[in-house]
Length: 206
Image (cartoon, rainbow, N blue to C red; front, side, top):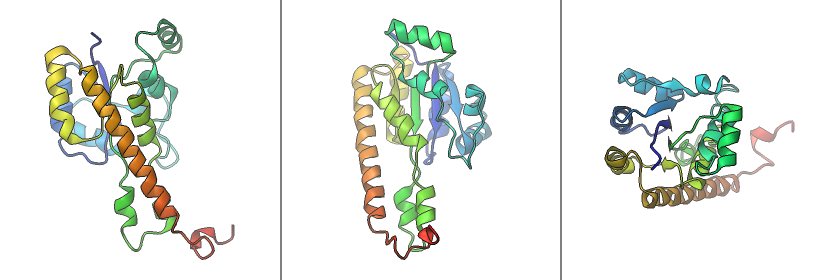
């Protein structure tokens, strides 16, 4: 059975993450992270590798580009039983990412504020998060994806037992991802559908 060796953790909701990450480290799992999540984990004494160090490419564009990199998505999406995938990973120096723990910018919370402008709403549309989640969920055969802190305990229990989660668990978690991203995109589309482009300041001078 494949063993989880590397996890990428990037969270808006950081509840329970210190215990979860510490449990992963206790099982010799390397932690990759970004921004505020990396800072919080380091404050808890947990060793973290910045994603920018892992990829060799800096975060940029006010944080809009952090994890959108072949070393991240290749590490998630390659099939571990596919010899050609493994050959390409070796050729391009791609390392496996076996667990992805991500949740999304709180778009609905942001737009619930009556003073939220279209520009503010747009900055609260998550791009990297859904991309990471969908990549990991698509490759549930090999990758564990987690969006809900309520799943941390079961994941740790399974990793402690056998070094990995079960395929049944990975499938359940993948399904949870697509339910989440579907709701997320629906909320964005619904809110944008209410924007009056003729009168919104965002469109002045366009």
